[in-house]
Length: 338
Ligand code: KG4
Ligand code: ZN
Image: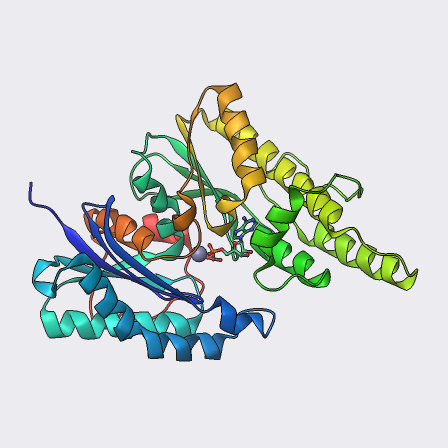
């Protein structure tokens, strides 16, 4: 069979990224330009600034990616682009660039859901075995997704308020850790002890999550201690927070894996880089004797390689786009697969 090379573009938040992916699982070249240092000054991503920086960077990122791969558009079979969910203006930059390239070269365009991208980042690790469940944990999502075949997504649970990444970033902010706080909180959690008694997040028979309660509890705790003139032990707080949220994520995932009798568990999204979560899922899967796929650390947070991997299957799903394609900031993963 002829190889299929996909030129993939991702601009849904604050990373301008481009990849060339062969047959859905070979990363020929990937370039990721992160704007984190710019947004750090504001304590979070500023949408207008993100769009402006994507506009400045995108053609340079394309060029660098082609150079790295030592390829031209002659070698490319499809162009793929993230069309949602994400920031409207940020998505727009990638989509317009993709449409312009497609128009200029005659190469067909594939539309890709960003969350499908996160799940398909696992294709660089191994093949999917159905049925499977994917625990999707990112800056915008906390979901349990059931899949009984390629590119078909059924949501069995989600967050009722904050996502897990959001909770990490907000808790980090209140103790003075710069955006995005998740990775640093994770590091600090290694050096602390579980000394703070935090409320258990929504622990019921549903597959839904809620992290606003624990987030508010941490914010109140920090404020109260400050008022009393007491120092917060940030490392102990990081450990206490991490162990509490990982516990509930693993508990609900474990129940879902058993109830749905799946062959494989996947973890996906920025928070899948979390070492506490990775270790707890490793232990759980060993105990249940089920295979776990975790993305390589470089593919956990936003990147175009995962979009190129998902695009290979989006193509089989006939997700070819025309020039009317526009951003869908609130795009649902489930609608996409049906
Ligand atoms: O998937 P992602 O790059 O962007 C979205 O699609 O939202 O996820 C970003 C989120 C941020 O909230 C960041 O703090 C969190 O992932 N994150 C982590 C870790 N690495 C990234 N959270 C906890 N532990 C980590 N090691
Ligand atoms: Zn993402």
